[in-house]
Image (cartoon, rainbow, N blue to C red; front, side):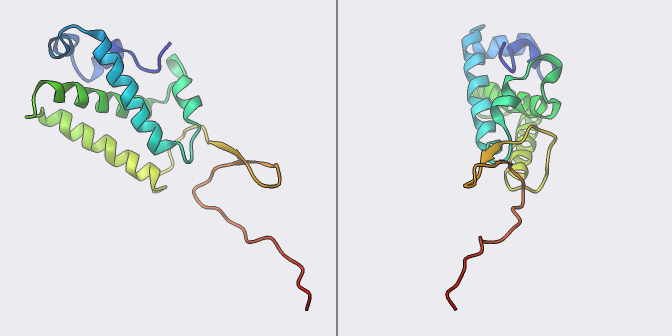
Length: 142
């Protein structure tokens, strides 16, 4: 099951409006959802496990990711209709993008699964916002 489907958008827009704008072509909505997920992944991938985030289903899905993904999708759907955007959609889109910028810049730390990496010693590390430590010590000849 996809992370977000058209019926999930009922909290931000009516199905009738979405159908009117897309000429009842659900493939357009599905494509916009896929593109919007990819956009969010580009902001989150450095610190978070985006595969775990976007493969979650039903109640396991992150509410904050759903909220901002819906805002971005609705904005992209509305922009198909007219360049004079619905003000609410524009404000919600701007808010979603600002939140993604803050997450990418490590200014906020949402409750999302962390990305896992293997360091040069073969140890599994969880990404953090700040890397602490120093260089490896080297024996000097003097």
